[in-house]
Amino acid sequence: MQPERRDIHNSTTPALCMSCEARHNGMCGVLDAKQLLLMSRHTRIETHAAGTELIGDSTPITSYANVMRGVIKLTKILEDGRQQVVGLQFAPDFLGRLFGEEHRVNAEAASEVTICRVPKTALEQLVADSPALEHRLMQQALRELDDARDWMLTLGRKTAAEKVASFLYLIATHIDPAAFARRPDSASFDLPLGRADIGDFLGLTIETVSRQLTKLRTDKVITIVNTRHVDIPDLARLKGRCG
Amino acid sequence: MQPERRDIHNSTTPALCMSCEARHNGMCGVLDAKQLLLMSRHTRIETHAAGTELIGDSTPITSYANVMRGVIKLTKILEDGRQQVVGLQFAPDFLGRLFGEEHRVNAEAASEVTICRVPKTALEQLVADSPALEHRLMQQALRELDDARDWMLTLGRKTAAEKVASFLYLIATHIDPAAFARRPDSASFDLPLGRADIGDFLGLTIETVSRQLTKLRTDKVITIVNTRHVDIPDLARLKGRCG
DNA sequence: CGCACTGTTGACCTGAGTCAACAAAAGTGG
DNA sequence: CCACTTTTGTTGACTCAGGTCAACAGTGCG
Image (tube, rainbow over all chains, first blue to last red; front, side, top):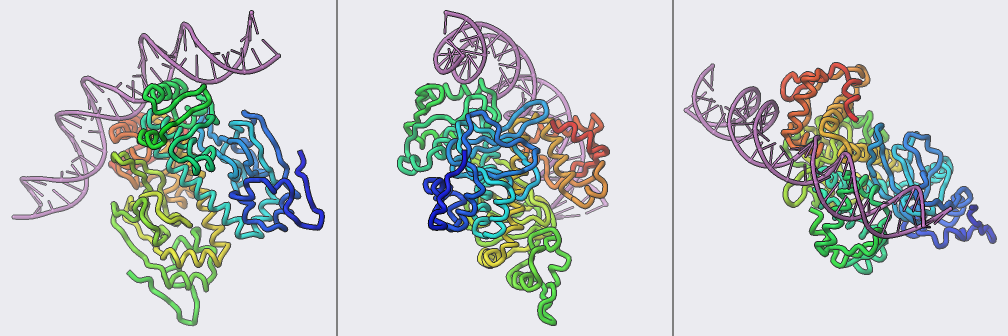
């Protein structure tokens, strides 16, 4: 899939960028029309099915990307196969380790995703020329660091019940920020992860995740519409279970 | 304690910066003589005893700092008192959450520490004027993010034995990078943390930490010289126990 | 329909937590 | 310098949260 380009009357906003979320809240928001055009000449919009591996741990970095739609999970794996999900990326997050030689995580499409890929050198050129862009990317890195540390508390010190509640709360508040802003007391959404991945995110087994979800259901904190879709009538009540 | 200043012959390197590690491998390394002088006019060198709280979670950010000597632990606490150490900072790390309103962690001196404090506005001014400085700070933020994610794998998926081994390996390789570079096969060092803090770092209890250390000792992987000082004759062997 | 996958539930087990006693350091004051 | 208290670390006995193993139930798809 090639990005459409509108170079007519030199340098209006590229057509594909028009509706892209990265242009509003993501990194492209700090670029002017000229830079956006420059960048769009190197980008490639890609759609990947759930389960596709987008980045392999310890592989050389050749490109970066912006998440346009869907959810990407970042994982780490021990030699014997034990896996930990170390982060989730939603639109319009930036994907990739800036200024590194090799990737430090695996990245896999958790749902069907659309990303906007840009070659390493092209983006690094742009970053070098635009302190504002680097600043924006730093803001995201710092936010991710905050998130990672929040999660360390969850992983290290919470019980299985608190972990599952924390996960649902995280998804409820992040999967559709607009919906959360509009209606911050309740939520209804599709889980971007299956039970196995939820377990890997929480440092739990599938069985424990399933049992805790059942418990939250019998306690009327959540309604499980079907295995993937969950309703949370009272987010404050859920938050109260996060420890 | 006021920083000494050497303005003679206008703008040589400030005396206190001369021997500071931050000027070599830390953020001050990217500053020119003029910027360094400008910065040193606002800095204050402070020494704090082990146990001193340097930053309180959710308090307004008023200053940043560089670690010059010693170890600082970053923690998060749940309402009921459960605590998680989410990071350790060694010289010449930068301390503080850039571009935030409030702190997102507690910071406490783990050993006696010397820090070089600089007011929020002064540093932010400097960062705004120096893309190179922001770049350097971003590099550290990205490194901390890598570290945090590595640790998430440890917290979520490793056994108590592997966690303790991982902790010792981390300290062995970080507490004195020069010594590690010089002699990468074995190590001998003082633990910067007591058993309680090690437990909080690993998501374990004091008792479990103690038992696992005893196990590593009886297995001849480590020698416990005294409760604080540890010898590791074969780092590769220790690494093999990290999972 | 039949197969493969994903999720749920139950029975049982085990690694790490809890509780408690003690030992060893590290302060503290006379 | 020594008694005395306080703090920190070790070890043992017991418990329990969450893991393991196994059976089964949905769900979707060729």
